[in-house]
Image (cartoon, rainbow over all chains, first blue to last red; front, side, top):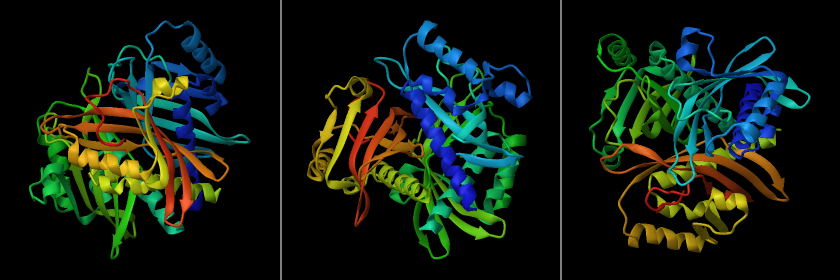
Length: 158
Length: 158
Length: 158
């Protein structure tokens, strides 16, 4: 039991650090939460539930994530907004071989300059983790969001 | 101290599994989070604070919960929507004899097809747990919600 | 590692008790979460990020907090509303000497009588804790909120 204790807390710490990096706009720190060959996918619940492959975003390596960060910070034209992630404690799922599995419900709030904060994107992370010399890393994070209707476009990672 | 550690994590895991079952629409799994004679009550804060008995829903056994699930899934006519629970870490309360007590703040977001996600119901769970051969079970979950004005009617469990 | 485990859980318990005291309107219990000379500050993210000193509220002792509670409960004229805090698990930050440091993302929802619940204030707590004979206490809680536009004025503590 003590091992699963440790694991839950480790995952909660990783999730909190991940959320803090994004919300504090330290986007360069984001790919480092993943393995070099880690996957980051954002998919509407409707497609996920039906087993359809279409995803809003599918990045299959840290390199692709770095490209995305470059796009966000340097090239994509978009109105500025703040994000704020609020996360439930992670739920441990049965391990798949060496892969640690968990899922976490999230709510992301958006604040545009001069506006009130609003619900932006809610859903769950479905995660696989690997233990590395540098600590726990995401082998895969699949963000399944509830609303097909995303307020404007989704610029920053979820 | 280590015991209360374990307990907090166990309750957080139970809460996460409970939320996942509801949000993933595995409603048949819902009654099994309770004791056979477990209670599930949903009450407006206004009534709770005044000690008034009126509750929006009061189910006093797994059997009644199963009936409710049957109603939700088979007979009640209602517009479809997704729910998403986001929960705080549970707060342990002083035990009442053998009863483990805790409370947890929750926010439930609702997403209707083609719409943005919105705040649906916020409040707290006031819980009593019993330890059984099959793990921790809810002897009683009282959902005290803040808003008397519930968006449409409350169909799915909170 | 076990020490940081304990600490995370202790902080989550403190945060949950803090949120419960506020949301249940037990405002008199609020200053006791702080050291006698504890600080409570509420600041817009815009100012925080720029290193500007202007804060919406800055209380520098329990005495000032008690004054504030007196104001809230006895003298300030305002429309009534409920609050509901939903908090992420705390993120431990590197300690600063004897000071335990952590930050926690929060969402506060507001419910006015007869209205639906709405997003009120989202942001993060940036905290310093001290260990005392009476348990963990806040030496400083800085609430950095995302929206400059606060729905009505901010009456109750965040």
